[in-house]
Image (tube, rainbow, N blue to C red; front, side, top):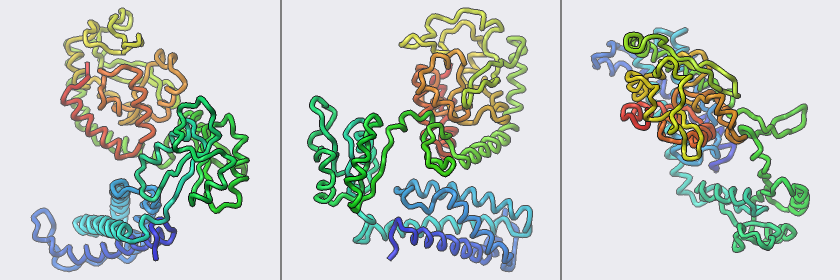
Length: 472
């Protein structure tokens, strides 16, 4: 019997998807003549033969792309909405890849047939996965093997792990309690969940059928980890170590092989190489598609600035981008030419006395500039920053070096990815929010990055700009 999170089920899923692609090609070739009645589709009277090579290449390619998105890792997408969302994205990438193959090889394959094939396969993938999830849920042994978790360490790290386990909502995970050498006066420990000291861990595991032990000790007392490992060595439990050192990581921490020795990398990049490839490709494709609309609009704005405010038209300024590197950001000029030499209005401070960057009544802003800022059209030239790679369509706010000098260490994590023309900060308050809150928005974006989040932010940015919320 197949189990939800087993290797056998992953292999079964890959085979089923490959068969689904083959069926999709075959069904699409049969259905294609019936589509001839649609006015925009070319008339075909007979079933079109599909080259044999495609019956081999397409299943391998589609399954390979799904594998790169970890679709077959059942534990990665516990919720159906997460799995289906990532399946949709992966299928879209696979479809584009196969369309490219057809373009350079079998151009005689009907476009209507190909689109029908993609739709059929996608529906097959969604359907069988939905049925499988329902079947697993109705089975008596669902949800797979129950896991009873004991946390060693009831300090801040242990409490955070407990909160995340509870928030995950996974029905086969049960947090049984904490093991710690309780110290009097430590009011942060919930005594009702404290099952004993570290020396009692063997008895607690046996009496409560514990399956997993999570060691969440602060790194100041890591010497006790050897004691925990020794006490659990002969017990049938998995032992996990939640390293408090992760809090010292600049972006994220990762385990890497260093000359044959497993090492903890505290400077691991925030995005994987594949994520960077997807993000950069998305920037280039969308950026190039926007050029035909953006260029005429930029030409009109340039003429208006020249007529009403004179030269220069473009405002250039140094900002700090990915990894703190300096780059030149381009914007339409919205202030008087000597704005940098004029005193910043006193109200340009947030409630903590930090510079807020923008104010509603800044006298240095021209009348045309106020319109450009209100509509965010002043930032259109940053599209060239996106195309040259110093910025991304979506990312953290590009920061002034003078403000970066005042950063605390945790705020520098925002430089883990390229700055963006728009971002999570843009759709959550824009200029209405204080500068220090932008950093929290940026860190949220970095830790939750996905292509879907980028697309969501771009769509929400359009509505934010149309409503003119928080822009001045």
